[in-house]
Length: 284
Image (cartoon, rainbow, N blue to C red; front, side, top):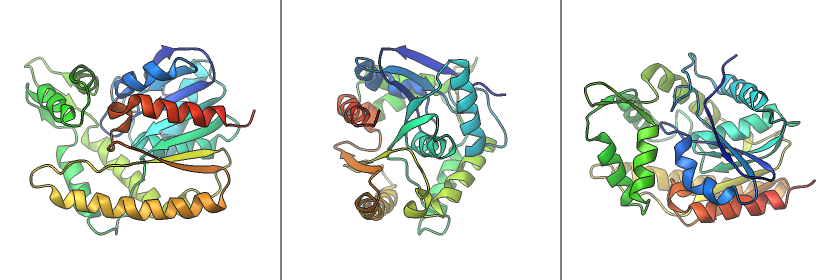
């Protein structure tokens, strides 16, 4: 049994379980959780090999779902709405698939991926693997906070999130996560789901789903203009698939937030309001 690190934000009301994205930690949820605890009990988890959770190899989504289940049992959480961002959104959906009796619903915040043969996918994978598990210089945290500030994320929140997602080393450098072995497993799992296409991937899931896309693209970094074009093209295709799905599947809701991919840090109040409205509308 593997228990994941859990941060209890407290609150009272329907249980929410928050899951973060690739290379991040539960601390990304600090701002959104501050709004959500007004009407919900809120627990956030670190994925295996991220934040303060132990690493597990191989890294597979079915294993992560089991770890989430064991962790929720340890915290006496028999039923919850799973809310995930990016990688966490995919895990939330897969948790709902595997546990229809325990997942009251799932919310996926911009957690969509492409197949191995999608044009440009190999280049994205190479970039992620090149930086996986890197030991970053002492100024790493400052750089992360500055980059987030350009998106309107408060500096204190950005710095705390960056610190929580890495481990300080004695020489002042930072060990980043996930390390390469875990990153290889994560990418394999993302491509496995991406190969299905959005429509097939979401087939057969019983609990209600809320699928949310970012309304704005990340500003392209110098030399990374190609990724901005790649991401815009993929997001458009996903949007078309989701529109078709929501028209035929009454248990699937689709929405959009006026923010970039890091919506829960850029627009925490809007994200919290959207989640709260969705939970209020759930049966029972």
